Length: 224
Image (cartoon, rainbow, N blue to C red; front, side, top):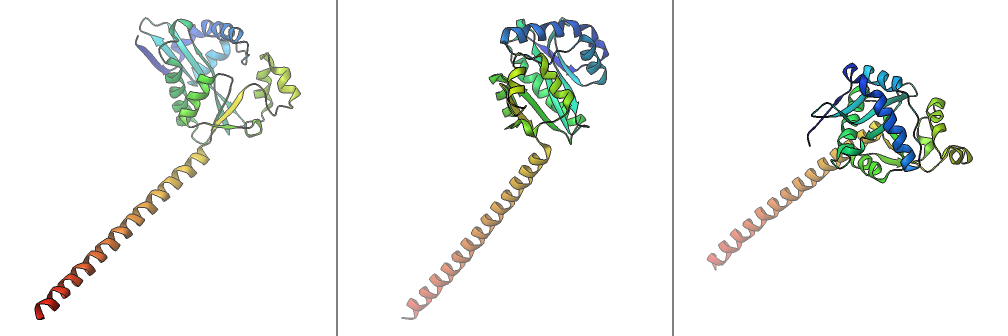
């Protein structure tokens, strides 16, 4: 099956209610909660261009995910990932996550991208994108973000742990750390090239010395 995955806009507003209903239904099936959102909230994300939607060839929605902004753009979260049940065997979740990650990087290049999830599949996708597991203390401390957990069935566990941990795994993609890693890899590559160059020069020098020695030895024996 062929899907179109694109940045959501005003032309997709009519899908918001169906997406919200599926988010709620899926959370009940999993036995875990996600921050409950209204169709109007999702429509706002679409208008802002802060969402990704997957569509079938006939124009039906197949998957969705949106960006939330916290702590004055210090953090952004890729939230509300959902795939319609009839399209869950086509690898759409991974493609949507890749698209929303790219959109987040383009729109908020200096922001840390984070997520909370209990799903092993989502953890695997995040890990493939370069996310690292972190403690809750490394996430945004914006109260509005944590209020979103009140609709989760595990909210009492979160409170009992003083918001230090819960059933969800926290993962983050930090542009500063990634830039450090990038620079380190470049430095290591340069050092490796320099070592190789020195080894080649040393090998060449040894070869020259060896040839000179052979030449002298040959001359010596010829004299004898």
